[in-house]
Amino acid sequence: MIMIILAVCALALCLYYSIHDLYLIYICKFPPGPLSLPLIGGLHYLDPKRPHHSIRDLGAKYGGIFSLRMGPLGRVIFINDYKIIKQVCENKSSADRPHLPFIDIISSGASGIGSVEYGKKWKILTKCFHTALVKIASERGQNLVDKQLDFIMQRINAEGERPFDPREVISISVLNCISGVAYGEMYNSADDENLRKQYQNHWTIMRGLQSSNLINLFPFLWKLPTAFNTKVREVLQMRDSFMSEKYIEHKKKPFMDNTEDLMDVILEVESSKKIINSKITIPDLFNSLWCLFLAGTDTFTDAILWIFLYLMKNPKLQAEVQREVDEAIREGNTFYPPREKLPYTEAFVLEVLRIVTPVHMGIPHYTSEDIEVGPYKIPKETQFFPTLWTVHHSEKNWPCPERFDPTRFLNTDGELISKEKLSDMPFVPFGIGRRVCLGKTLVMELLVLIVSSFLKNYTIELPEGENPDMEGITTLGLKTCPYKMVSRRRHLLL
Ligand code: HEM
Image (cartoon, rainbow, N blue to C red; front, side, top):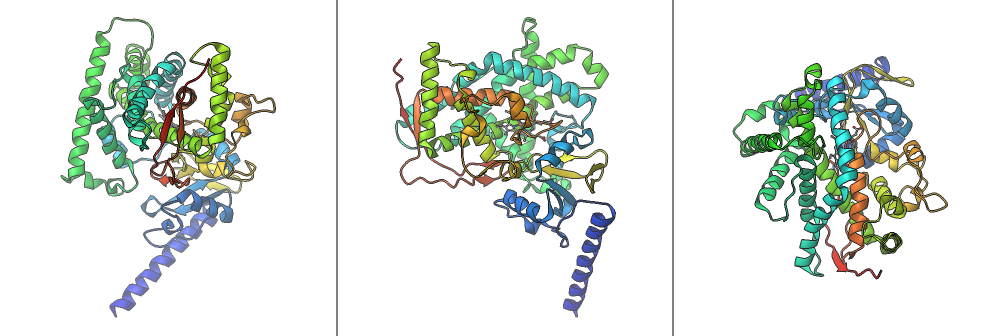
């Protein structure tokens, strides 16, 4: 009898979900998509290891924009088609971010750049930080990269030509680099105790941002005295006192009228009228600065690790980059060839960002008003993903998209295609539209410098028998599978 009651309930629930889905699709004009099961919705359609492949396959069946119920998040929209992503992401009603309980917890009531709703506050915060990041990239880029490479070389010197896994040292060097951008201060050794502490703290918070963190589904769990919650509280306390310390140190510095780091930006905004007119608070500014660590550390680390992996997988192309770097050094009689002399190196970086797409699923957006897309509607207060990986892997956008070929970004004279042409191409590793990545200019500058500065001194190889899966591992972004590398010192003959 119990079994019959359970079966009837299950059937009733299935019917309820199906009718609701049909109502959303046919009456509310939601983009089409598979019907949902009770509780899990359409989660069973997504391969947890390769959700981006599932999204591409569902798109092939339902079209460039489709919807899928994502458990408790309700029906979420995925956009695979480049033109639709562009149209929607340029619309100001698409530029909010969905609410994530763990972000609220770590923001302690403040609004940071990455989560604040689209409006005056966001515009002022973005403008100030973006201007500073561009300036830092052009004035201090080489210095930041030299420090990063110091860490990597210290590790290489310790290992000699023994294979080692570069993830940890690259990750710490990136954290140190962002610390330099934020506070103007960098550590000299990857083993520095304070830097290691910051690294561990960063990982604690990143764990909380994962979709596997149940607090995001059941926020009351934050009230429980679990080991993880206690650790997060400790980390937040340390973060607040560290930032206050840096803030006080910067306040004591003599006034130079020159932005050297992002704490200087905070002091500038604080002393200007912007803060009064826009209701920006000091915690909002601190939170925005911290947001750059969260948004920038893993993405930047993954990008470097992927670039190294593609260099090792394609030794001939690595030799081509080295040839270009050596020639630029000889011609310019400088150890620091300018970026415009390195078109192939930059094309290599761009091609890795295309084929990998480190933020493969994009970062979710949230609509503040209804948005019409052809016959469909993305209703107000709906979450959508611009699925960037599918844009880079569509035959419609890129001939033979699975082939790794840096020359896609060069013209017939071997020059890098112009910025204008690049921005017209379906190339979106940093997103597109109003909430495009804030670190884009900085990170592109640094990646080209890292590759050129590193390859002038080293040739890297995969150890014999090492064959890492090039599909990578899905977490918040797309990471490389663990790999080891061997670095051989090279000496450039001038
Ligand atoms: C290769 C490295 C990186 C990649 C591939 C990347 C990619 C992205 C993507 C796809 C978005 C979402 C854009 C959208 O929603 O339309 C984003 C947002 C963002 N990124 Fe990056 N990013 C990288 C490095 C960085 C770095 C180094 C920083 C900081 C220094 C940074 C700061 C941000 C911020 C603050 C946002 C949120 C912008 C907003 O919501 O207004 N990113 N990034």
